[in-house]
Image (cartoon, rainbow, N blue to C red):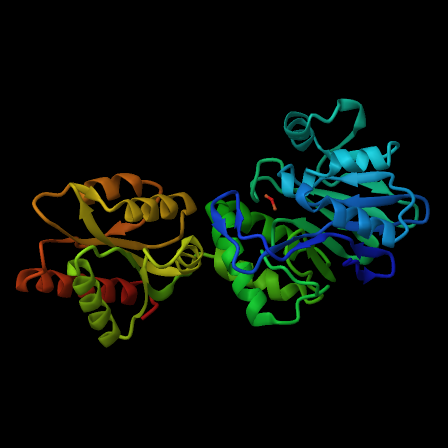
Length: 394
Ligand code: FEO
């Protein structure tokens, strides 16, 4: 039972998934997650903003009952993905007179994904409003954060923006509003990195729109809400902005110690130069750590062991993930080792085609690195230092 009061007439009746470990069968959830659904009581009509994951339907219905919700006129769908829309069908059975309010694209998707019939919908345009009597809901189309149909809903009189996935965090918490800034910052950054970063230009555009609005509360569909909107809006501005940090991310796999010797040497050299390093042994670290550090690292150096003649599969996966997340990394390099032959670098470069980064000196050692390999690592470290100085971060 977890009804959380936002204001006198707005409640979060969503569910908390304390035990969920992965999302999309891909993204690790170290802190579980929550699916926020907001009930807005108007003088004439009531609205529900988004639903919850169908796996938590019993808790959701229980929350609805505990709030004595006897009438729902509008079910607002900000986003089709099933963790928010999957219970709309259940809601329509509970409240058969309710209408699903959404944009044209989202309606099309809901009809395809959830088989909801067209008669149930009211379709709105950008900035259109509907009245609940003494309250007004305004719809703001926000495509590509992170699907093409995503939108925000704004409760005009109370200055609340319901932003769905945008500005959210995978965090199981019964707190109404964020109070542990450090924990929420990390969870929100991880969420941004994994879900929003590939759409950075759209993030920037929609963020600007929100910054021009009067907002007292940000209510996303995952994690706690914010009664201090600038906290999350400023964090997003930093993450999605063009600035990078004086930081080198080094994800690596070392099968027999050669790549480990190379990346350790590079870490030493970069440390001497005052450059922060995040060294991730990808056989022990996951997508989350990789994504978070990719958000603002100026440089990524991949440490690549050769398996047969290609990259170790874990580095193939690492490269594929980085390429899909499209970080704003300015510089990239490859260091690695092989036994008798290798096309590992060619393969890695081939899968990093989304990155708009400058390739620096690559270092490929046969077997254990030797003096000439360490000299090339010195060259790479000097190049990284020079580039970081050039762009004004060192
Ligand atoms: Fe939380 Fe895109 O779903």
